[in-house]
Length: 297
Length: 320
Image 1 (tube, rainbow over the protein chains, first blue to last red):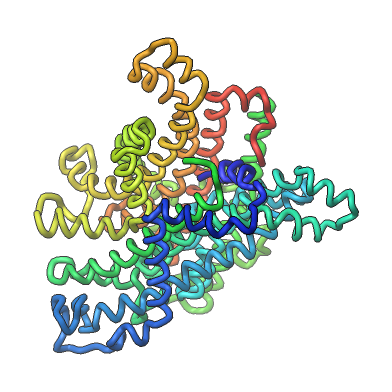
Image 2: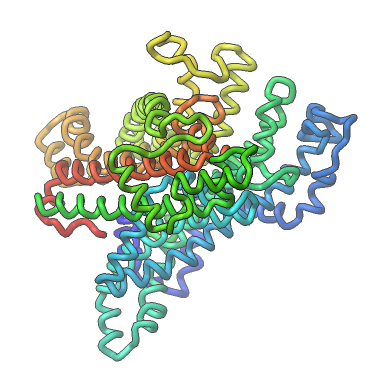
C-alpha cells in the first residue's frame, strides 16, 4: 500500500472508538476472520518458540557429529541432520530467535527514527520539511535490499548490523507515512482548537496528533515486520548477516543449496519456517488492519 | 502542467545530487584503505603511496567528490580494480541480462495478477476471490530465494526438466536462454504478481462501486461490456503507479534471484563487487541503480499525471 493510500485510510479510521464496546467488537471481528486468528496464534507460537528455544530444541544446535552427517529425517532427528551432523530441528528452533529479533528490532528502530522525523516534517512544514523530505527521497531511491547490503558492507556482517541495516532501510517508509498522516491530522479542527486554547507544539504533537496516527503506524508495522524477517534471511543467505555456525534460517538455506541432490530436507525446514512465520504475520496483520480501519475491502 | 513537470524534474535533480553524495561518502566509509586495495597485495609502502598520489586519494574528500562527479557526468565512472574494465562497460554487459529477466518476470506478474485481480473483484466474496486473495497472500509471504531453491529441487533435481543454473545469451539460442530464465523470472514475478493482484482487486472494487458503472449497468449494458470497457481501464491507473514503485523491489529481488540461479546479471554484479571490495564498481553500480530508480519514478509520476487529469489541473493533489 502506498503511503498516501494509507494516509487517506487513516483519516477515515479516526472515528472515536466507544470504549466500553471495544472488546466485544474486537471479539466479533475476530470470529469473522478465523484465518487472522490462526495467523496470530501461529505468530504467538513462534514467539514462544523463540523464548523457550533452550527447552524446545532438545539438542545442541552447534553440536557436530561426524557419524550423523546428512541423515534423512528420523524419529531421533525429525528434521534430519545437516552437513556437519547437527540436528536441523534444533537449528530451526534456535533460528526462530534470530529471525524474531531481527524482524522486530529492526522495525522498532525504523519507527524510532522515522516517526519523529516525519512528525517534525509534517508539523512544521517549510524548509525543515523540504530538507527532510528531499533526504528521504534520496534514501528511498536505494532499493531496500541494496541499501541494507551497502550498510552491512560498511559496518561488517553480524546480526546486530544486519538488524540496524534493515531498520535504516525501512525508515524512509515511516518518515513518509508519518508526515502524510500528520499533514492530514494537524489540519483537523480539534488540533486547531487545542492550539487556540494555548497548547504548545510539543503537547499538540504528543497528545493530539500522535495518538491519532498510531493505528496506521501499527498497521504498517505488521506489513514491515515480515518483510524485515525475509530481509534478514536474505542477508544471512548472501553471507552478510548472521555468521556461521550460529543457526539462522538464511545461513542454513545457503548451506542447504550445496546439498540439494543428497540432502533436500536441509532446504525444506528453514524455508518452511520463514514462510509460515511471514504468512502468519501477514494473516494476523490483515485482521488487525480490518480491526483498526473500518473501511471495507 | 508545465509547472508541475518542471517542479518534479527539479526535485529529481536535487535527489540525484544527494544520492551521489551519499554513495560517495558511503563508499569512503567502507573499512580498508582503497589505495592499499588498488595497489594489490604485493605492493610495498612506497607503491601504495604512489597509487594514493596517482588517484588523488590523499586529497580532501570534497575535492575528491567534485572530481568524481565531474567525471561521472561525462559518463566516466572509473575502472574496476579487479578486471580493469571500465565500470560503464561492465554495467553495459550485465544490465541487458537483468532487463530481460525483469521484463519476463513483469510479463508473468501482469499475466497472473490482472486477470486474477479483476476476477476476484468482480466475483467478490466467492470462492474465486478467496483463492486469488489467498494466493496473493502466499506470494507476498514466500521468501523468493526459498521458492527458487524449491523450484530447482523440483524441476532440476527431481524431474530434470530444466537446468538449475547458468546463462545462454538469447542471440545464441533463444530456447536455451528461455529454459534458464524461466525459473528465475517466475520467482521474481510471483512477489510482484502478489502485490499487483491486491492492488488490481482493490482498485477494481472501488471503480465497480462508482456511479458511472451503475449508470452503465442501468442503461442495459451487458456485465462483460461494463467490466471490460468501463471498469478495467479506470482501475488500472493506480496499478501503473504501484508498478513503478515496485521497480526497486524488482531490483532487490534480482540480486537474490541471480545469486541462486547463477545468472550473470546486474544483481549478481552488485553482490560480487561488494564481496571483492571493488570500490569503483560498487560506487558506480549503486549510483546507477539509485539514479535509474529516481528516473523511473519521475516517469511514473509524469505518466500518472497524464493518465489522471485531476492531478494535472489540481496541481496540489499530490503530497510531498
